[in-house]
Image 1 (cartoon, helix red, strand yellow):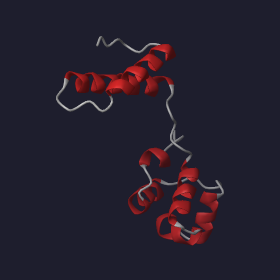
Image 2 (tube, rainbow, N blue to C red):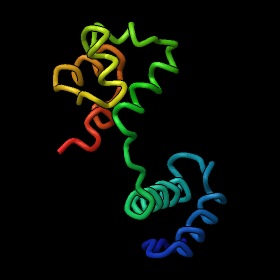
Image 3 (cartoon, rainbow, N blue to C red):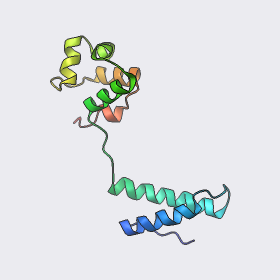
Length: 119
């Protein structure tokens, strides 16, 4: 198979069709090598043209709260007293670097999400 750069959405659809045919190729085969190259090309094109921005930091915190069944009171060890938690969740106070580190370490919220939009 001849592998070409992906420059357009039409090229992307063609690459996906090719990938469907060789997706489960056995490792160590030519088809597996072609699959790996196609996946890399598809990822590069999608990252450039269809990038997904990280979520807003407060939305990321609220999502993690929902995932883990947490209440604002559960955030106090990471953010501080209840008043401060309320201010952060209501976007009246920005996250400090200390809060970001503690939220990352304690709740495993990615730094990319907690720092999104920071200048």
